[in-house]
Image (tube, rainbow, N blue to C red; front, side, top):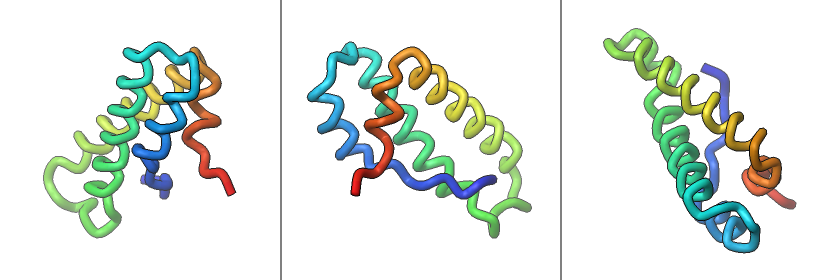
Length: 85
């Protein structure tokens, strides 16, 4: 699996409060990011030979696809999830 950075869900939640993104969309986006954080943790390179890794990898891909769909529908979401320096 590629090295996806972990999402700072609490920071993104705070940023979402400053946008016009519908609450249901915001909650779904936060849930997708939370799930991606958990899945990426489970998909560490040392665990690839363990049973269930294929299913976890598929689930991770599905969550990445859903994140991309939400960000396509609401472009502000991708800006909110990037770290600001």
